[in-house]
Image 1 (cartoon, protein in one colour):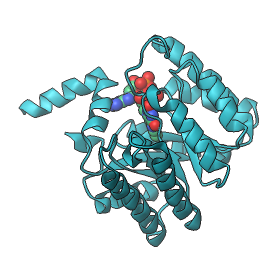
Image 2 (image 1 turned 120 degrees about the vertical axis):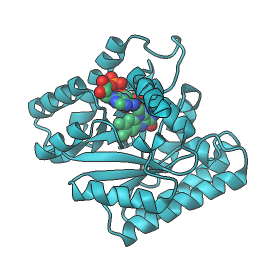
Image 3 (image 1 turned 90 degrees about the vertical axis):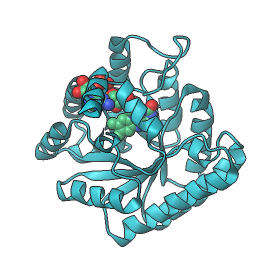
Image 4 (image 1 turned 90 degrees about the horizontal axis):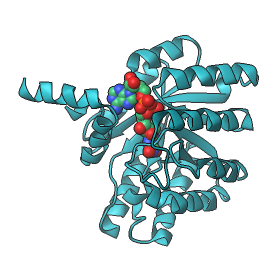
Length: 275
Ligand SMILES: Cc1cc2nc3c(=O)[nH]c(=O)nc-3n(C[C@H](O)[C@H](O)[C@H](O)COP(=O)(O)OP(=O)(O)OC[C@H]3O[C@@H](n4cnc5c(N)ncnc54)[C@H](O)[C@@H]3O)c2cc1C
């Protein structure tokens, strides 16, 4: 069932899925799944997996970059240790003329993620991160990261958050998404607008036209297995589209977030389970 959202357990399956996306005119971000590792050995294993992905992307000349999670790289164990691993991955990204995107996790990690990314970004442009429109703090974080010239992926946010830190109503999240998108698009840096929501996509297209931001100066991003029709339509209309392709053994938390954000997916899951 998870196959709908996850390319497979091995890198080869992910690379094959990336090739198919490239053949359809879409770029890719490969994510080796994993989060909240409990030992430095597991974090180093994740680091090695990310290094290997950059090698394979270069070898196979794929239009792909890499997404990672800091808790897969030992953020829970030590920020300094985690930063060391991120540095080595970003060095590899830069050496292969590529880019590492640091995903944003639950709000307990937001501050540390932004600080770490700023620190690494001050030494290499080959790193960027993610801002979640559901958090109250995000406008401030956008301003902060833009001052570092940081490339941002804007998403709505996928974690269960407290009303003390995040908007609860979808309409408020959506309004903040549009507000943040309007800060990003004309900022002069290349950002990713990550959503499957046709209203967010429509607002982005209008904003780009009004601010005279060219179709080549930003990209839409969507998840593997979600709204493939929309992905293809945007490519047909001349927009840049990147598909986020997760792979690896540790797919369960990712899969659960995909089920949670859309109740219809749970029905789909149950129907197929009994079939
Ligand atoms: C490329 C990419 C990277 C992301 N990275 C992060 C990250 O680092 N941190 C983070 O917190 N979140 C991340 N997310 C997830 C994001 O925060 C949202 O949870 C998710 O994208 C759903 O929000 P939406 O913008 O698509 O809008 P919604 O309003 O949730 O959905 C709009 C429409 O999209 C379709 N849709 C959305 N989700 C699903 C689904 N799971 N299954 C089937 N259809 C669906 C439905 O048609 C729905 O009506 C990422 C999303 C994308 C696309």
